[in-house]
Each structure stands twice: as C-alpha cells, then as structure tokens.
Amino acid sequence: MSDKALVLLSGGLDSTTLLSLAINSLGSKNVSTLSILYGQKHDREVTAARAIADYYNCKHQVYTLPNLFQGYGSTLIDADKENPELSYQEISESYGVSPTYVPFRNGTLLSIATAQALIDGVNYIYYGTHSEDARGFAYPDCTPEFNGAMANAIYVGTYHKVRLLTPLQWLTKREVVELSQSLNTPIHLTYSCYSGREMHCGKCPTCVSRIQAFKQAGLIDPVPYEMPIDWEE
Amino acid sequence: MSDKALVLLSGGLDSTTLLSLAINSLGSKNVSTLSILYGQKHDREVTAARAIADYYNCKHQVYTLPNLFQGYGSTLIDADKENPELSYQEISESYGVSPTYVPFRNGTLLSIATAQALIDGVNYIYYGTHSEDARGFAYPDCTPEFNGAMANAIYVGTYHKVRLLTPLQWLTKREVVELSQSLNTPIHLTYSCYSGREMHCGKCPTCVSRIQAFKQAGLIDPVPYEMPIDWEE
Image 1 (cartoon, rainbow over the protein chains, first blue to last red):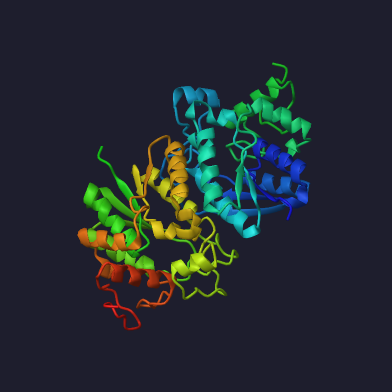
Image 2 (tube, rainbow over the protein chains, first blue to last red):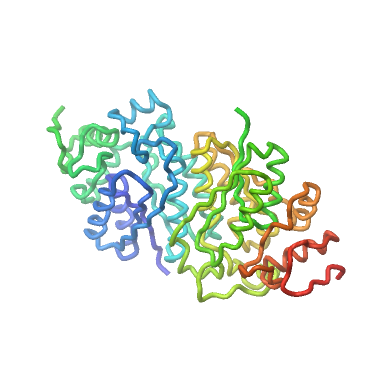
C-alpha cells in the first residue's frame, strides 16, 4: 500500500505550501485535504481551500465543529473582540500569548484530522506550523514541543498507523515563501486575512506577516490588497 | 486562586470513581464534569452522568461532537456493527485492537476537555483510564504512553495552564472497584453497558469486566442486570 497523506488545509499561504510539498512527495492522487470550520468569524479561507484542492485535483473535506471555542475571548472567535492591527512580533512582545490564540485549537484540529486519517486509511498528517508561529510563545500550540508531544500521542493512540509531519516547523515565514516559489504553489489562490473580506486588509497580524515575508524574499505577493503595498520598501 | 478540576465523566464506574477522587482532593465546588456525545449508539450513560453530577452537586456540561467517527467500523458507532460478547482479555487476545475502539476518540475528547478547561479557568483535567483498558494494546489511546504524550501536549499547548491527571492509569479494574468503596462512590448511579438498555446486559465487554472486578473484590455490584449473576462464584 502506498503512503497517503491528509493535509490540514486552511487555505492560507503556509498550509498551501505544505500541500505542494505533500503532493511533490506522494503525488496528488495520494493526498487529500481537510478544512475545519471551528467557529471562526468567517469562512472565506475555506472557499480558498476548496479552490486550491480543485487546482491540484485533490479530495477536499470540510468538517464543522460547533460551539466549542466561544467564551474564551479569542479575537478570531468572539464577536465582541476585535483582531489587533499588529505584527506577530509586536504581539509576542506586548501580549505574550496572542489575543488571536484559540483555546487548544490545534490539538483539537489535529485530533479530528487523526480520526479522519484512520477512517480514510491515511498514514501521514501534514500540519503547517512554522517557527514564527511559535516565536515568543504567541501560539503555544505551534511550538516544536507541542508538535512533538502530539506526534507521539497520535502515533501511539492510533496503534502506530498515523504519523504527524510538520515539515515547516523550523522555517521562517520568508523561507515558507521561498519554498512556495520553488514548488510552484498556487499562491494567487490563497487567503490569509483575518478580516474575511474579499481582498486582504493588509493590517491584521497575518497580513502584516505575509507582506513582510514577501518583501524579505524580494517577491511580490500576487493576492489583492485593499491598500497599495510598496513591495520595493 | 484555588485549584479547579474538570472530570471527563462518561457515567461509568471508572470515571465516577475518578470524580469521587477529584472531589475528595478539591471539594465539590471546585470540580465540574463534562460528558461528550460523540456519536455512540446510545446516550444512556449521559443520563447516568447527569445523575452522578447532581448527587455531588457538581456542574455538568454536555458537548455534542457531530459526524466524526462514523465509517471506521467501530462497534460503538456504526449501526451495522454488533458489539462483541467477550471480555476485554479475550478481545486483546483475539483481536489486538478492540472492535469497540473509536478512531482517536480519546485524543479528541481530551482536546475538547482542554479547550473547555481554558474557557472555564480550570487547571486540572481528570481522565479515568486504567491499566486493563491498556492491556494488550486493545485501546492504544488508554496506554500510559498515550496519556504521557497527551499530558505534554496539553501542558505545552495551553501555555502551562492545564495539566492532565490520570490517577487510575496503573490500577486494575478490581483496584478501581476497591477505591470506589473507600471513597463512597455512588456506584448505584453508574451505567457501563454497551447495550444502552435500562439494565446492564451482563454480556458485553464492559459488563463482563465490571462483573469480574466486583467478584475479584468480593463485592456485589448494586446496579441491576438483565440476567441473574452469581456473585459468590
């Protein structure tokens, strides 16, 4: 039996680059994708995920997890909380844990992906966290320590049938952008913005980080922004 | 701030004894309970869990996780699969992984409990797996290896706010019964049977294991069975 992979695909830059990497290793017929609606304020990114899966001719599943994460105060979930207009670096310096942290979201999403992998007979889960997610402990469930513990729990808890792969975990966002170039990732189809509006806002933490990474790599991001971006800066 | 615990309460003998242990340590006002409907064929055990929480005057929450575990072939979930009439020992000898294994269920339930613990400001999760669940790898997500990995993932992934406790993990079922006696656990309110019928069937793996444990402890189980049980045997 050939190796099969399930990629947790949010529709953003990181998980789409991860999908390219999985397809590069295993071929698109052995790779399927899973997006999870967990109560985030918008589902614009799932629309992007579907377009990306279609582009690669990969199976795309959407799982809806209802009513779990409300009430913690995450700005991604709770209607009365506004997302900050800061970079992740500023967040990690000023807040410690990010106000966009969703309580144990990634453990929950990885557990759901593991259940789905067992049902589908898939032996690898690809998870696209990178080193800047982990910086300053802004997202504790993106750290190598967390990834390693979950990898062990998944491997043991599935009687050694499913393995967690986190091939981006030591990369900076700039290196993810550079990897996406070398893999011909369809970046133009990705969506990263917290706003959920049609175009990227350019101001939320994930837009700021995305723009910065393209600038550092000396590249122009092909997705549309609501504001002019000086890519030469 | 005093320590607070969230107990994953199925309504069975093990998790109810665990609840007694948590209350014995922290007092009932610092202990809340969580039951999860994850697609199991019946919700009889959640009725028991509610009665047990009421008995102790503890908060009881029920979370419903829809449409995740179907299609794997677990006899606890899939309508076309019948639960075996065997002991866990026979299962571990004849099947390896139990036909009642639900794909990565315990990782998923623990992740949901962790999210809820963060929302509720709770710092301990109590999880009632014991050594006979782990025997022969029948339930890989009940092994000390799994528990340790999840404990690490939970501790790291919640920025050290939530800790997983598994105080029954080295006990036999007989020792759990003996512990329940010393803690005055309301065993008469518990429900363990896979059948979901009002009385315990006495034949499914969990009934067989429960009856055996009471006999080994020299005690009579107070719950009603559909068949006469010779407790002196």
